[in-house]
Length: 442
Ligand SMILES: Cc1cc2nc3c(=O)[nH]c(=O)nc-3n(C[C@H](O)[C@H](O)[C@H](O)COP(=O)(O)OP(=O)(O)OC[C@H]3O[C@@H](n4cnc5c(N)ncnc54)[C@H](O)[C@@H]3O)c2cc1C
View (tube, rainbow, N blue to C red):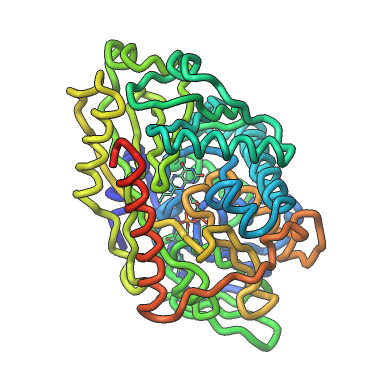
């Protein structure tokens, strides 16, 4: 059992009592492994569709222990890396399809928050993508031109003076990408609200219950945990960055860590030096981006700048004092008015990356075992729509969601063993090199 409260400010910010541990043997229709947004939303959508289904969620620590309780809380339309990358990899039609899926996911999540009164500090603020060097400004302009050529609406350019009127930094160059249909939220509150909703519907969530083994066959799948077993007709592996620990998914993704620092609440003077009355989520256009936003109590949360890659065996890369120090320096460079700001916390967490950095939903070895992973740093909203796609796969229905091109797609495998890690390191090394060469923040 890990001290989950150490894993993010969000998780520590409110008291939490874990649910029961699974003891004994359980027979269900659907067993879901992983209590993040993917697993919880899949359970919710399945229960909505058929309240008679026997569903159980098994979580190795507590809900939100993974990326869902540690992220920056941007509900955004980003999916994969960026539109141009998706268009190169999958073609222009699919790049547009992916965007529409992600946009639908943002709208879905906003609707769920409103309809179910999920108390998660949701604000529909819009999103700004900014450039901090001339070179990245050129790339941003090309990207938005492609988006418009694809026929995507809802994304506009705002000129430099309008950008500075919204959020002011001496590092910003040129116009910015402005996308109103996005939001920010408190992810740990959201994840715990999902637990509340599922509790009231009688869907059991077993916490501190790691699945240590899985066997399939004879019309049922068996999951083994330290104090019990679950036999299920269908299993959902919603284990994200941990997915490689299940043999059928061993080479389909690698865990990649991203890091965050958080300030004390900003004073009025500090906020005035930036503007930021619209409280937009902001990202810069680097390869290894910075992402930043204000929290409900006006702290500045900033993450990104660098990533760490584990070797897959250990998942113990949540701390990176070096990246945290650089992020603190970056805050002072981006917003000089915050030069004296105090920092309150720092943390990190793993995202799931496929080789082409695009999500994948499909079957793991058997049609009775469904997985979803690879949302990298863009899963807050998509995981909620992925939950509906998973529902349809579990119920063996062909729907517009199961027709989406990344459902049941071929996932390019990482080379097995240490080689996969080397490939991922090469990619990260290139991105670091480009940022050093092209961006003012180096
Ligand atoms: C620091 C950080 C910042 C991010 N910022 C954003 C953002 O602002 N916007 C955005 O869209 N996305 C962001 N992301 C990505 C986003 O958080 C994820 O895509 C999303 O939360 C994935 O949800 P999930 O349920 O698939 O996975 P997770 O939340 O990682 O859940 C997987 C769960 O499975 C459990 N598990 C693993 N193995 C087992 C097992 N054997 N038995 C039982 N349980 C198991 C884990 O404990 C974990 O709780 C960020 C991620 C990080 C780490």
